[in-house]
Length: 100
Image (tube, rainbow, N blue to C red; front, side):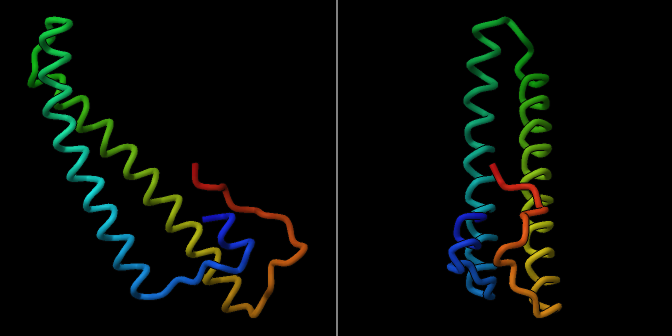
């Protein structure tokens, strides 16, 4: 996202917003499926109660998604503020945390 913004190839449009939402929904669905499989595997491998493992993995997934959402929203908000101010970030230091 940072690289595309620096290259002036990043523009927040409604289609991009919807595509992002769809991608996040697909990511959540993939995590949910993976959690079920991993909970079962970890339960058998380490003798842990599967229900507890599943809860821990779901909390981990939710925490990661919350961080991702916060970082994306902060980045988009910074871009909107810069656009509203009519500013061009050429030559200005990057003050927002990059997505990793």
